[in-house]
Image (tube, rainbow, N blue to C red):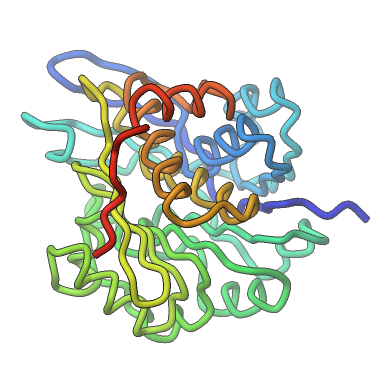
Amino acid sequence: MKCFDVCAYSHITRESEIFGDVYRPFIGGPAYFLSIALKRLDIDVKVITRLSPKDSYLLDDLKKLDIEIALIPTQSTHSFHTIYGKTLDDRTIAVLEISEPFSTKDLELCECAKIIYIGPLLVNDFDLEFLKKARERAIIALDVQGFTRKPIEGKIAYVKWDWMEEGLKYIDFLKTDSREAKILTGYEDPIKASEILQSLGAREVVITSQEGVYVRIDKHVYFAPFIVDRVIGRVGRGDTCFASYLYTKLAKIEIEEAVKFIAATTSLKLRYQGPLRETKEEIARYIHNVYRHIKINLI
């Protein structure tokens, strides 16, 4: 029986966007960006996803990297169209197609893993029972994004996670962005928001913002800035950030160096559209050249 570093449960999506009158179709979904980033970092990852067989081409990039995939065929594939306003954080998301949620039976497709990653895109993608059963098998890493996104009248509406207090009891590593953290806690301040999320059960909390990444471990918060001249690849920022965080946990990297690595990896990805391209060695050079004198703030 093979044991993976990470089994990633999430939908891979068919997407498109308009920004500045430019239309772009692309492949999306947490499992897409996260698994490619993990593979670049030499982490053994398996993706368990649900999509329609007619959209199996969405998996081609993963296959080229020899990422193991368990495809659960469905009638439909999650599909979204995003229209941006003046900034990359000002956006309206249309829901074009909805796939089927994951079930506890799908956990059988991951016989052994050190970490089970769960990446919902919509509120019903996973339920509490899935989290409970997954936690019996491995450490759980959750990107909370989808639990704050509900399709209403063909568009994404942002809502509170109904069963958050019960769900967080089963989460070891939690990832949110600053917008989601405010929805969940009522606080814009990532430091206060992470404190509340940790108090509800999450062992460690990662929060991304426009400025950088906050990581709460025990009672301390560490911050490192994103350093990038121009943000081009906003889509996949959080997935890449969380992938690099999971890498630092698996590699047992000391916290201050880990936060620097997470920020540097995410900064590199922000420079271009699509998933992470750099290797560990290239990231190390970027850290040496750009982050060498950056002090990691302990808050």
